Length: 228
Image 1 (tube, helix red, strand yellow):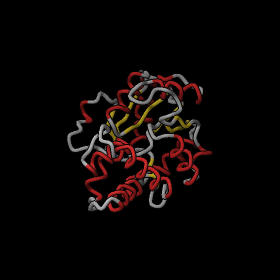
Image 2 (image 1 turned 45 degrees about the horizontal axis):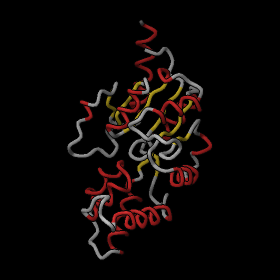
Image 3 (image 1 turned 30 degrees about the vertical axis):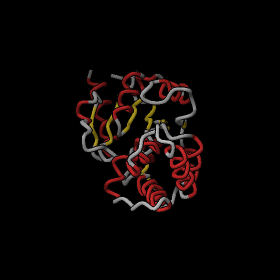
Image 4 (image 1 turned 180 degrees about the vertical axis):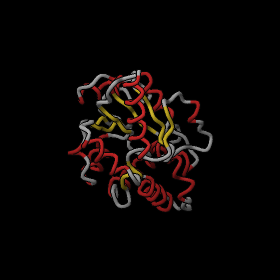
């Protein structure tokens, strides 16, 4: 166990930020523009972490082989880009966690599969970009999660060893990427989990119910490390 955590890295959608309201609005706008009925927010929310492709599959019942798939996905993302930060915000309690990490001189950053042309303006709009130690988007490298490369790249940017970092996400690919990178991992149960997800089987170091649990985990592991 690392004696000192030097970096905390976050997935974006469903972990650091509650982006579901704006992504759901973009999907429903796409549906209505194509003469389809809007879907309930509760139906859309669990799918948000899986990106635009999963949202089109949910809304239109087609896969990527369908000729309409890419035009619909582009329409969805254009609508979303135009309204990136209408209702999106940090999850309740996350602002205090970020403040405390900074007080402790623990650097924090973002590693997401969201493309940079959406990630960067969103973090800018919420005045978070200048606070991050790194931002690694889905198109920063050729590889995306669950490949460990984005997380290893984040460690290089932050200037820490993977074993001294924690990665927090709400999807199995997040935990797989973190484990393969040699990091400790936490599952954000407050994120966008699907009904069939079994996060207790993903091999994470802990499951957290709320952002404040991140600080509790840091305190516990530090105490255990000092005791050992």
